[in-house]
Amino acid sequence: MGVLVFLLRIALCGSEAQKQKYLPSLAKFKTVACWGLTEPDYGSDASALRATATKVEGGWVLEGQKRWIGNSTFADVLIIFARNTTTNQINGFIVKKNAPGLTATKIENKIGLRIVQNGDILLNKVFVPDEERLPSVNSFQDTNKFLAVSRVMVAWQPIGLCMGVYDMCHRYLKERKQFGAPLAAFQINQEKLVRMLGNVQAIVLIGWCLCKLYEAGKMTPGHASMGKSWITLRARETVALGRELLGGNGILSDFLVAKAFGDLEPIYTFEGTYDINALVTGREVTGIASFRPAASTQRSCL
Image (tube, rainbow, N blue to C red; front, top):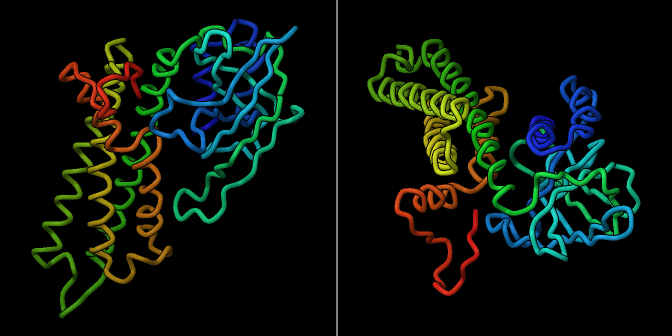
């Protein structure tokens, strides 16, 4: 996922030289990459990030911290978003893994998506040459465009999880017997299985529609946020039903449903929590931003 998002950033906002330099190896997965936006104190309120980029002769000096950055502990290249100290706008920078002053530390004790190594990044006066600044990232509005696309990509992860959980439960209910009959013979189990199937079909259609809107150039941030939030909400219900159907076996990793149950929790949260994505959609529907109770502030969140 991190490599694909990095590739997308370079493809959409990189210079021609950057595209030629990075895209071929990224496309072949010869280069491991990640991108860093979230910080220890700013997750949903990403527009308030504190990492800074100061212009110096021949390049930029980055300082600050990033958190929850997938692949960061072993990435060859990182895209770091930081606030330009001159313009106060958010810019993007390509940082090499061996850059002096760059440190990435693995976040331990995750209960979900353990296949992904999320890390804390420390930027201690990291120098980035001018040619490694992304020319088309000059504001949070630019960054927001990529977040919308990322949310579509993320929305397909719970779709795949739910399809796997449904398949596992369908087979399990037909094979396991209780009270002299397969579990699939009981009405309440059939109702839960059908509800799961309905959710799977619905979230597949929403994901497909989002992709078609994006291909047509008609997808808005509200579309992407509604899709990601609604899909993960329905997916959360689906894997919970799957865990119920497997009874005690539902908490064993042997049956995979427990793994999907754990993996869905971080997906429900990252690339904007359910609540934040719902508010992004609400802002588009009503024309009124409701991220902060204080009416005096003009800076908008995600």
